[in-house]
Image (tube, rainbow, N blue to C red; front, side, top):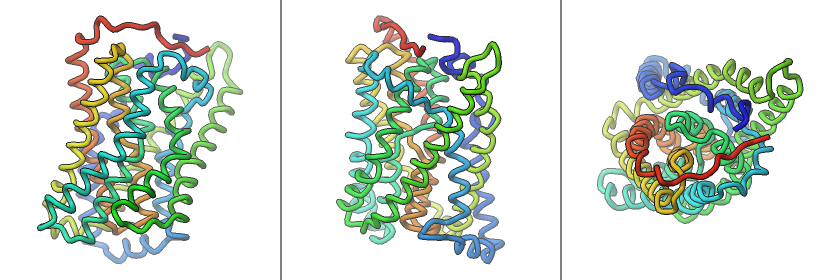
Length: 368
């Protein structure tokens, strides 16, 4: 692999940022802070909730852009020319992300909130929680996948190809899949808001990220590659992404604090289908990779990519479609809290089972 293919390939697992390593802890602290602030200053949060245009809360929009933009700079669309190299892992990821995961998440949401939890969850609330689950299931991960790939010593260039192709597909497939599944669960779909959300939180950040990447690679210093310049820039702006995420969590739980205080068991109920989905999807993808003789440095990242979610997009669209105080928005934020420890447990499992893939080997993908 070219030494400048992607800087993440050369950083050890210990180089993962302090905030990323303990993300679930910071999110839990921000949840507590949001609930406390929402209870202490309800007037302030009502004022912030009113700052919206065309069903888009302006404060949250700025925070979401702060989360998404740094990760979009990492997306290299020139890597798409390599989608034909070692297609097995790519096929597994795409099938899981777009043909399995959204539909199993919707099915689990209906099973738990319309059947198993029907006696303890009001029907209107159940529909909101199902909508939040659907948004999480239909949004494949874009940023944290590099962390999961790094922790399993995955082929970082191959991960980059997967992320780039996923983002291209997401531009066109996210809105139709969400609309289809929301319609199946009898939730009215405001198409205008949904399309606007995709434009705001996928298309515009992608364009901004691609433009920044092109600018950075065009003014590299002597003796370095464009990818080194991109990695240096993204390392500088990464704290912005983490701060924006944590601020969003504080805001959302400030709006939702009364619900959590009144019904503390609700988080556990919402977490149940999320946990089943995560471990189930990983089992499908990892098992398929093993049976198809995919090498470990591709098998582990492709299973982890299929399991994790683009929770920043899910949060933003939930707010746009259903509002800051909605059960859908609450569900997407709980998805963040659940995902990080789950993914770390799956990383540990993958590393422990690395030996099962020793006989599976292929030549690495390389970018020019």
